[in-house]
Image (tube, rainbow, N blue to C red; front, side):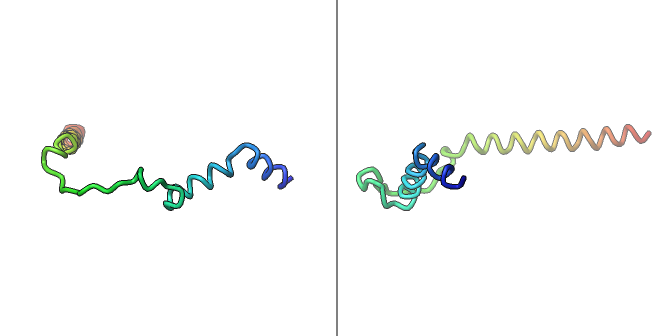
Length: 78
């Protein structure tokens, strides 16, 4: 039964794909022309502006929710 499973993996090409993926990850099968290094630079505020807007929007929504829960709990007690 194990032989059937192994043979189906090999004949289906899954084994070759796994080997190729691992070679690619480790750099063995990577083409040196594909991977080129560029000089890095630090991110500016303009680069992360959209992410910061989403972050502070989330903070504002969570603060609004917290205040709403406090008010609701306070009104429900009376």
